[in-house]
Length: 384
Image (cartoon, rainbow, N blue to C red; front, side):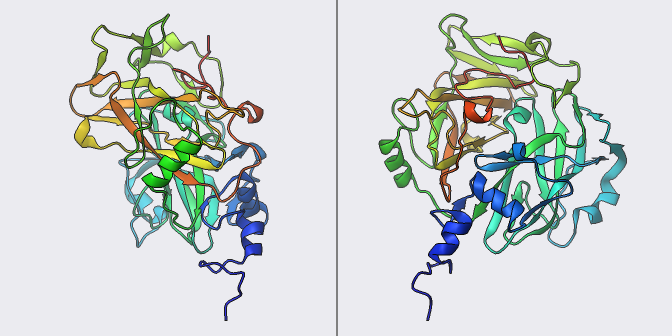
């Protein structure tokens, strides 16, 4: 007979409290990630994981000592490791220990310092860090026997790799550079639109009315600040190299062209150009939830938005209520020029509960860079 304290997943109340927190399924918060690193040994690393890598609901991943330039992006498939496939696609090896320039238009594969030894029902999902996405650096996680990018399957045990492809700016990266981040999930909890509407009624997720259908809709702001009327930035081409580990040192106008509001309230997205825009809504993520911007339906527009889609618990949320923070949108048109209108839906946020309330959330107390942000470039650029 089952222990009366067991739940449907075979966890006892004590197991849940000691290992995962209040809930047996959901995204694992920072203190539970520490248990996976230091106690359960489900997250390992060739070098000790630093405390600064642990975010409220994710872990920053670090590049290893070498990078392989490859002819094309690839997945190992269900019957092969990444190294099994590498010999057929790699052109040469690059030493990242002293630092190396990764050129635009090239694809690199880099072994990460971290690896996974996941137990039953524990899985992972990866995404570029916010600063990586704002530099138009396309990076994805790969595992051995992977059939999809940015996923670590339940019970996976093995190495982790990053595919890195700078699209607009050449970057200087080195061993230990952090380009992507990992969320760890236990189980497969579902969070419905009905639950999302209830959550918004209890603690508003956006200022004003919420458009909730397959997630929370975000629209683009093309009116801009009342004084400057700036609505975005368009990346310049043929710029200097950006050191991904150096903060606040670059002049924005050397790398970006400002975009101002038009009388029509629209802009034309040119193919192969990269834009930084902002949402019209100010967002507030409750401390015990995390959100992700999902790929938008291509049937409503020929553009891709938000390479870096993770929103941490506490993003835009302030005790006693607040006005939230706008989402910064990394936008690239696909095959043809596309007219984007003010107020047009440009993405949707899906929400997921954490297994427990993290001891610290996104914000100034943990050195977060983008709290209360408006139209803001990555942390590599000087801020006025």
